[in-house]
Length: 169
Image (cartoon, rainbow, N blue to C red; front, side, top):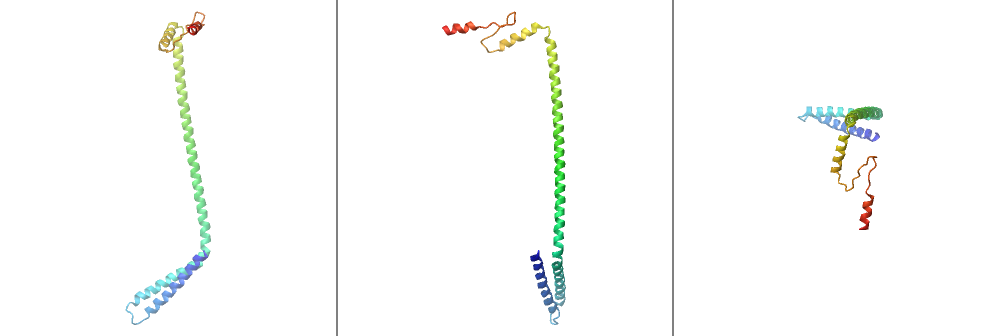
């Protein structure tokens, strides 16, 4: 900050010297463009005044500007944090709504399966012929060589002796 003030002060001194030179030229009676040099002299005086004012105001105003700037940056960060929090809340609400919708869809699907199972179960009660038909169809589609046939007691007849005969061959 001190360097900036020094540079502005030196520029002000240089412009002041230019203003003096232009003013002296404007006083020369042999010169045709006296108005031009008077205007340059006035412009130099204005620029020098601004430079000297900046030299005085910079050391006072710059620290206050930095404090103001930091407060504005803090306000901006706070606003950004608030916006990010709002975004996170909205995303959480969207996830919650999505989960509720998925749960409702799962409940509806489970109710449909339960109704279908009830209909199938009700249709199979006291319908042994249809159950045997489904069993025979399943056996036709089976690619297994060994088939177990239940007896009247519900116990399957095994072919354990068949394996003994193969080992003897």
